[in-house]
Amino acid sequence: MNVSIDHPTDRPNFTEVTVGDVTIWFSYKTAVGFMAPGWGRVVQSNRWGNTTGRHLNYIDDGRKGARVDGETFAMMLEEATRGHLPAETLV
Image (cartoon, rainbow, N blue to C red; front, side, top):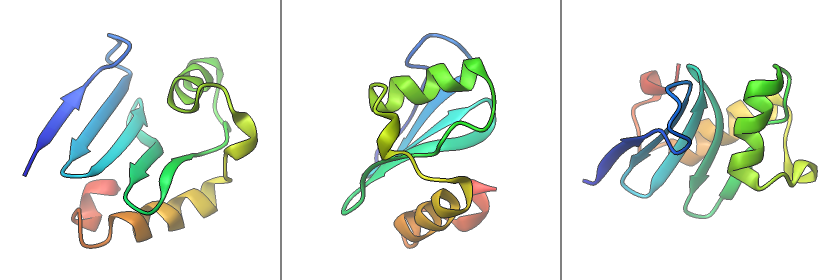
C-alpha cells in the first residue's frame, strides 16, 4: 500500500497524508480536509484562525462555498475512510 506524508507548503503545521487512495490534510494536528474515492474533495469550514484558513484555501483553491461544518465533516471523514484506515488514526 502506498503511504506518504508531505508538507505541501513546506511548513510543518500543514500536513498531507496519503494512504492508498485516501488523502487527508491536517492543519496542525486537526484533520481539515480529505479526498477519497466516491467523495471527491471535502473541506471543513474555518472555525479556527488565519493560518488554518490559508491551509483550507490551499486544499480547495479558495472555493469556500463547498465547505461543510465540523460535525458533518467528521461524519463524512469517518464514512469515507471506513475500511481504508483504522478509525483510531483519525482521532
